[in-house]
Image (cartoon, rainbow, N blue to C red; front, side, top):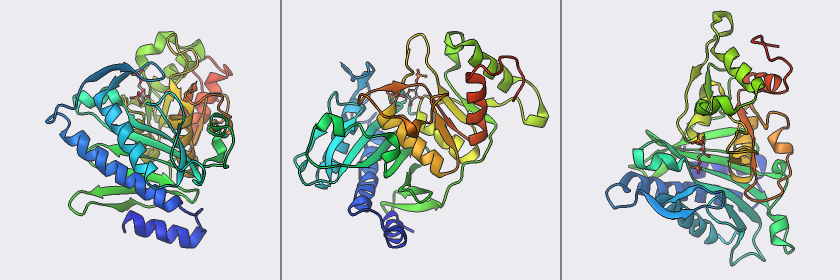
Length: 331
Ligand code: AFP
């Protein structure tokens, strides 16, 4: 089943808001453009740095710039998007159709850009909100995370996958390059309640508080009854690590550390969209203290501490994070 056919069915069954399926189809179109460019980047001189920093201080890669320009033009041409918040743009971008358009798009066009030059996994993350018409653009571009009406990600790995939710479960599509179509490969994805994997930059272990170090001690302790030790998987691309947790169970976390006092990951276009996807699949996502979808962003590039994945694994992280138990025992 193609993406367009699946969206048509979803529209008939659940009555999606007008134009939403067009936007989700455009995600698929953008993904095809990006997948093609990522595949040939080494051959056409499109790897490496541009020389600038993005709004949260990361060195911009040529592919970051390409991906941003591609998604902006693909969504602008729909006439459905009033404004775009992107990791690569300092300010909210108002489109030519701001007056008439219905939606706000929050997007990380290229997640995992440190992987571009080593042929590693990459991603695109997006969240879609209703746009409430004229008014202060910056304020309107900061809706509460729970107001997202659709979200998802594209993963560029061994194959290109598009995973989305429009509030009626989570569905995964794989790009058939010969047909040029995204085909349904993972219907109604459910995140296992508990996994065997954890994903984190453990190189920052000594910058974490004792509560989190105790959590790592717990995960890596030997106890076959609770399937420990957990195995470490960390790719440098949130999308790829989250995809593993979503499919097989497990947990990804990026807490605050010495360099990132408020966490590293961006709320609007990394944490909130993935939180909606994972919750729709039965998992959960929080800062360690507060559910991500309950947050009200105060700026478009706001960073937060982040934990996401299987419900029981996130709950265990939160238990340790609260300092409820800094010994090596579980709740
Ligand atoms: P980019 O979107 O800027 O490429 O950042 C990648 C990322 O936000 C996330 O995908 C990774 O899990 C994380 O940063 C990696 O950060 P460290 O290199 O600090 O581990």
